[in-house]
Image 1 (cartoon, protein in one colour):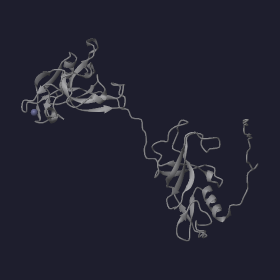
Image 2 (spheres, protein in one colour):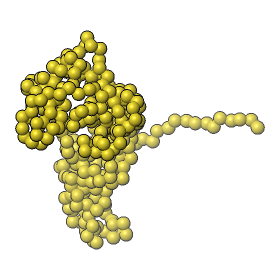
Image 3 (cartoon, helix red, strand yellow):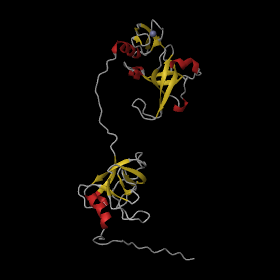
Image 4 (tube, helix red, strand yellow):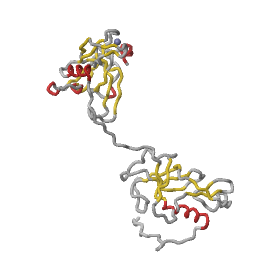
Amino acid sequence: MPQFDSLTADHALEFPGGYTRSVGPVIGRFLTELRDGRLVGVRTAGGRVLFPPVEYDTDGTPVTGEFVEVGPECTVGAYAWVPRPRPGHPLDRPFAWALITPDGADTAMLHVLDLGVFEAGAKPPKTLRAGLRVRPKWRAERTGTVGDIESFRPDVTMINAPVRADYRLSAGRALSRFLGGVAEGRLLGHRCGVCGKVYVPMKGMCPVDGVPTTEEVEVPDTGTVTTFAVNNIPDPRAPDVPFVSAYVLLDGSDIAMVALVAGLPADEVRMGMRVRAAWRPREEWGQTMANIKWFEPTGEPDVPFDDIKDHL
Ligand SMILES: [Zn+2]
């Protein structure tokens, strides 16, 4: 069989100068109100409010001629996300077509939903959902067309304000002493003279008994993971995600301290796991907890839950 390419030709359907028609009293009123910056619907004989207004109800009954102002607050119903707008689309960046029902109306109008600036091909944002509350964005110059509404935009529910505070933290006597120990590769704490608990880092007092503490104790840099969290947001101290931050109960201490845990896949970290501090090279040490890069598994058997349950 011989193969034939099917023939094609490009055409355009166009009324040069536009297609002029009269709109009648109902749609005419709708467009006039749009020009003046208002949304109106028309009441049916059955009491519903049709928006945009039309001459007849769905069952063919003429509407009452009573116009009702609706909106400007509106609700999004069905929608379609347009990741790559075409020539002739109302916006040249991703947007949604949506069925929009103004408060006080019983029917919806198809219009443009502008959810902000997105790159071409973007996925629909999480804010796009049925039930989203929106308002019309009116054009400054209006002529009496549905284009007098440039788009509908979500209500303002959040702001983003720049935040920055510069301050100097004073470590105080107890923490300064602790960091002095860390600068020498030692972990220091205080034992409470009343309850006997050991606090690392020391705080200079026992929060349980409300008494000052002075008896200094040094604990080893080994401990047990009590609880932990797997983090998927990068942190300056742990740029590779996922990373694990954990409460590590140092041997001989009664209060766990927060530290990074590394040296094994994040999903293998577990409660009761034995760990040891991974110190940075000695020449990099300062009076800072950054001397300890993180804690790594020692390979010892896990500690039973009963032994750590009082330290969670
Ligand atoms: Zn105490």
